[in-house]
Amino acid sequence: MLRFALLRLSSLVAGIFAASVIVFAVIEVIPGDPARVMLGLNASPETLAALRAELGLGGGPLARYLDWAGGLIRGDLGISYTYRVPVADLVAQRAGVSVPLAILALGLAVAIGLPAGLIAAARRGTAGDLAIMGATQIGIALPNFWFAMLLVSVFAVGAGWFPSGGFPGWDQGIAPNLRALVLPAVALALPQAAILARVLRAALLETLGQDYIRAARAKGLSRAQAILRHGLRNAMIPVLNPSGVQFSFLIAGAIIIENVFYLPGLGRLVFQAITQRDLIVVESVVMLLILAVVAVNFAVDLAYAAIDPRLRR
Image 1 (spheres, rainbow, N blue to C red):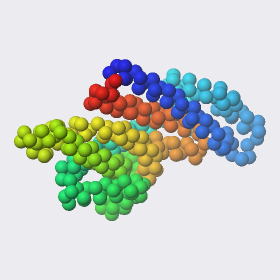
Image 2 (image 1 turned 60 degrees about the vertical axis):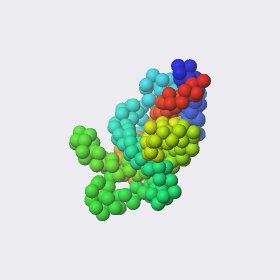
Image 3 (image 1 turned 135 degrees about the horizontal axis):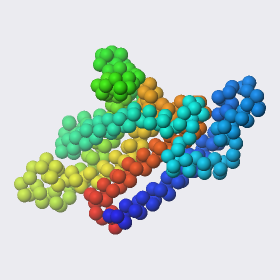
């Protein structure tokens, strides 16, 4: 197990390095001058040159990359060009919205998707199975931003049960902040729940055809007991892999959802930084999101190996 973990960790470190090079290169070649955006079109060349030197934009690409990557390793994310505060402070403030949103959305996806897939597999070919699979097909096909606007229209504007946008802040108490996160979390969770349900159903149906399941049924176990006691653990093996990938989709979807609901999270921070040409914020936040995805996938790989010992070899 230790050897497996070290091998996976070494490959992930190589992937992080490659991702940092790609992120820096892509963002650096985007046309536009942050100094000119900050000072306006009528700024003098001397003022522009002084601001570029202050922001560290005067060196070559390699020197800027090494300075940026070294800061990431040390935990120094740099100073925002727009807000003139440390990027780490901005990230810490916005993470207080994005992290609870991602956790709530992932919890809802698991709480909805796994029971739905289990019920569909246990009632294969029945009306309940067809209804669940039809609902999952719709959940996968609908864009989450359109679904988010539909939720706002029905439950915020129409019923008035939840706020249509904004975030009061954790100093206002837990209840109002959770109410503000419910609709965004549902909009993020339902497409992922649909994927989980379909994957689990397919895995369970394959597992139910195995000899050990037939032996358990021959011993007197009901179909439901055979699924829960013997089939579910083996069926969870192919479910773990998309669970890690789903975290990436939650992060990507949060960029859109946070703008729909005006949530001051990391996704909205990235969007604002792109429009303001705040390159250091974009680079640092994107790399932190990549690190979060890599960490989650590493944890999924370890869980995968724990469930299936064959992978350790």
